[in-house]
Image 1 (cartoon, rainbow, N blue to C red):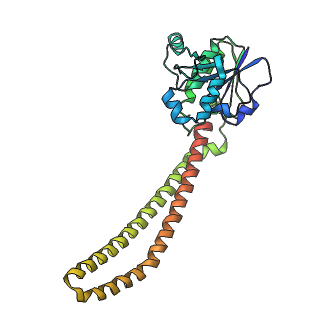
Image 2: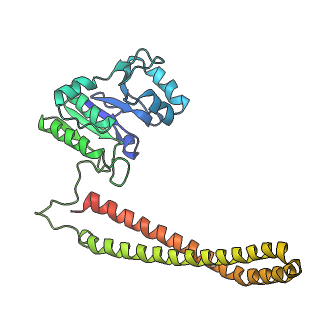
Image 3: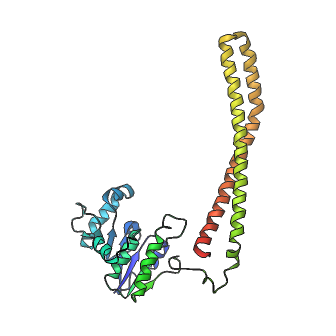
Length: 278
């Protein structure tokens, strides 16, 4: 027997659904895209499920029957089996299960399969899965150490490296990463300073206009005869500053877009460094 664990990223379409040697294990939100499954797992509490899923998911769980495994009992799916997480903790000792996939890898090892494959599971760095990936790789290493074949699609970054550290020369773009990171940080800091200066000027103009308005209100009470003159002065200053305000507002928007662009470039750079760097 071979066990395929199916997630929700693109490579799920390449899973061996039609190969009878493979047992398909689905989990969580993959029910919307996986064409078939042999077993289904969801280890979240009912409160978490209700906060993340629509009613259709609970309707789906009812169709799973005894092929469904949960960590917590649910009255709406009485046929579901309980996931043996306590037994797994007792056997594997180390409390290093940071996501459903890591639990399923351990549970799959208990079935003594020929192979364990992960499809639709990428766990790229710089995403919510960054802290979850190491435990999966740890358990996959244990499985491989037991002689179980590990199958990972090329599109997944699990158990991948762009070069062998110390014995292979890193690609040229990786060598440039430290200086490129400094360059991006400097540019972002420059844009942040420009935005701060423009925001300061906008605040100055807003404060000036507020002072004129307050002076006008005061004179309405204390010196009615001066009101018309002050209103004219107020309007004159307003007409004077309006183009400046619009110009500064446009500059702020442009700077904000530039800052977002540079932060996006930096994020991609960090993604490449963490996944393919050294």
